[in-house]
Length: 250
Image: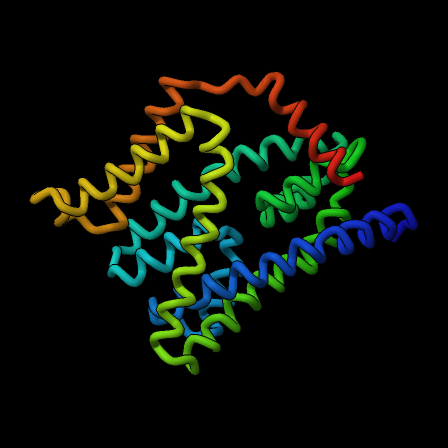
């Protein structure tokens, strides 16, 4: 390995440590949800290793707990994780033209919100080894968090397990509140989602639809309607976001 590549790898590893520690805490709460869905610690570890997304795994575990079909589970996971397709396309532009396709493929395997932010904040062209360094610490800690969450859930009192399950809802609230406060369109979409979810759960016909199918329908319809009614202009926002990320990294 060239010295420049080694330095990039170490930089990525160091940058990934705080991300990995945060992942461990979040994944621990996900492990409680996975335990309620009947997964073993090893199964939870594997699920987290191949599905590096809090919202995606939450939808996955809840769908399993509600008895959703394989098709529903696959579809809802795809819908919830669809934003990573856009992140991967954006991140691919950071690589130099001679970057091997396999490197792009392996980096794309672990495109998460935080690892994406670390990658795009790097000045100049992105070296794949930087992402490998960040992945080396972040991915195992994420997977181990789920493993130990399930393990703890198997030994803790059921009342405490139920209480810890609520922690994940707090994480999702922390995700949606800041952008909802800044953007009226996001705020309306969030309120509409809550209201529509409640209405679907009590309507005579809609409540008989499985929770996985209801989530898929509401996610696609509400997000599509919001995008059509209030499209965002990313021409300036992308550059400003990158600048903010770079300032934070410095």
